[in-house]
Length: 324
Image (tube, rainbow, N blue to C red; front, side, top):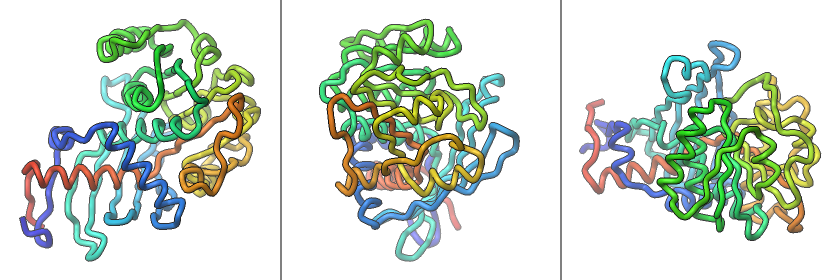
């Protein structure tokens, strides 16, 4: 293919067929957060439009060493009523030297996997040593990929699952028992039963601008790590503010989202994930600290994953070449 007069289109099937593993993606996002902490990656705040209160479409550009791209991603919580996914995404990958477009690919799978990978990285750095019980609140796609990553980086033996939809919870428990036969996967009847017993708590519900979060102050036990990927939709301000340490994946993104009505009652973070990876900010200082890291979603993780997908697709001859 002529790189300068054509581009490669990768469907969702092509992206999955590229065969990247969760372990490979965790290492890729670790590398890119180090680059961010050292000032070698650019992750400007997301541009967003809001078709309605809790539905949004984000434009997410990023520059990482060796790649540049932009993701166009929608999140519509109301899609569940239509039997459609909450998230749809496309990504354009460009050559960083010339700016020429190299590929257009489905990024829904990439979004799910890179989010789980960032949770895995966060847990590897910030979870209490030996954390073995994971709570998953929100039994959708993110509940699956986050567990996949955590099972790689922690000695997980038990999973406590909760969802406001009993059918979704039951399906998750059944599927995760089949996928991880060595784990005890249990559905619980209310959030407290999961949060209070877990060493790591993943919340993966829909992102809401005006949520009614159930998780209260002190539910997270000593040494616990909270890893929300749904902003503060599950965590009350009191629960976040009472923790010993509070991190985000990007300080600039956090500040920018505040201007759009999010996080008005949350304390200032103690640092971001790039700073922790680069050793510029201390992470967990004591085993008993309660820590929350709020992963807001950075395009650098999408682009570094897309670059790996693109390279693997070229090696395997995947995709469709389109003329420019």
